[in-house]
Image (cartoon, rainbow, N blue to C red; front, top):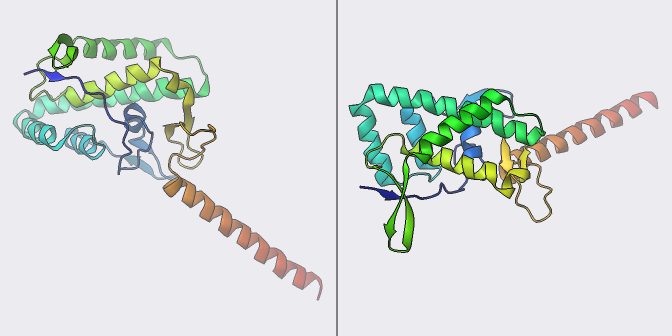
Length: 221
C-alpha cells in the first residue's frame, strides 16, 4: 500500500531539539548542552524511532509497525541506522555552512545529492481524493520511511526562503528557524535556553553587585 506523502511537521520535540523544523531538529539530536556535556539522542534505530514518535514525525501506528520490523530484521535496522548518522552529518555540515555563509564543500553537496536522489526514487504520483497526489512508493513496513521523510523535509528547506532565517541559539548552539515578527530571536526556546541565560545573567549581576558592595566597605574602613 502506498501512503500519501505527508510533510514532517515542525512541532517542537520534548527531546531538546527545538529547531522549528524536522531537518534542524534532526541535526540538534547531537549537540552539547548548556553545561558543555555531549548529548546524542540517537544511539540506535530504536532510539531514532522513539525520537521520531516524540517529535510527531510519525504516529503511534507507524511507530508500532516499525518497532516490530526492527526486531524482525536487526541487520537491516543496523544498516539503516548507519544511513541515519550519515544523513545527519551531511545536514549538519550543509546547514551550518548556510548559517555561517561559508562555502559548502563539494563532498557534502555530492552526499546531499545522493541521499536526495534516493528519496526522490521513492515518490510517485497517483490519483487521490484531491486529484493528483504524491505518494510514498511501497511504504508499508518500510523502515527507511522516517529517514526519507526527514531528508525530504531537508531538501525542501534548502530550497525555501526559510533557509535564510536559520540561526544558532546563543545558549546551546542548536540551529533553529527564526519566524518571529521582528526576526530578532536569539534562543531556540525562551522557556529553556532563554530562561537559563536570564537566570545566569541575574546571578552574575547580583554577585558583582555584592562583591562591589563588600569591596567598597573594606576600602572605606
